[in-house]
Length: 391
Image 1 (tube, rainbow, N blue to C red):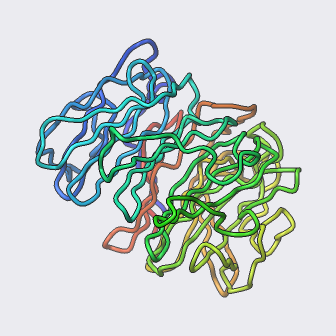
Image 2 (cartoon, rainbow, N blue to C red):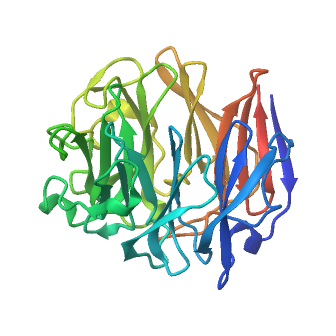
């Protein structure tokens, strides 16, 4: 059984969640049970069930609001760190102890334009030094590390991490921790439709990076590129990754939803335990979850990996047999991925082109309720915000 609960109708301008030509204040919101870094004005928090209780609002800084880009928040021991672009578009770090009201600031020597690809990522190593990377879309590596634990005033640029040749065209930075809490940093080398995914591991003793594996995780063989969700640690203590292959900079050329898992981010296998050699390429057909064709309605940035118990499930978008855009969920039954259509919408999102595009349908979040139901939250250009409830 599937229920589709639409919360509200949104017009196209509201759906973009962008206010051109103005500045919104970035507010750090302390909530019961956690911290949310929220980039909107007070009173605009999406909490339809009323479960969030705000204890305190602390202003951090003013930020540009004319394009969406991901900021970073890190809470480690009794320290908080925020990576963001300030009103002058400079990459900035704010830090404080939990008990402090005042923020410390460090402006780093790089500025963003209007590119939503230029996300910020941040992590901390076992020596308690802060690492931050971002503002890259086919650019030379931009990476900073503190020389003193927790002290953002000691940020220095690190370049190259391993190889100048491999770091002149970098995009999609990501930090991961392995089972030993070693810091792993991955990024895409090369452009959309032609590139590889490289992973480096940090050594606190030598204060240097080296390759995590001899071969890249993904290699499109000069024909395509993998757009991945993850790797992320699952409840089974394995790392899981989901991806779409994409042939060209045009987002309509996404295809072939795929999956792999690993105990250590070095050796990889399929869901049924078949070993996968690195690099994973378009010829690694054993990884395919759903052979969505080019122009089949699948798009990177719109897949969500979640778990029912320890079992992975994947929510994603593609066209149905009538050419309409629908959400599908795939799960493993008898060692095979089986996909189910879980929406029934009479709308086709006919996307195409390179660069940042407006998402007219977005899978926002997937979770399993205490009652055992699956909830998939979405935004839809025609239906607004809503949730699919699946038994």
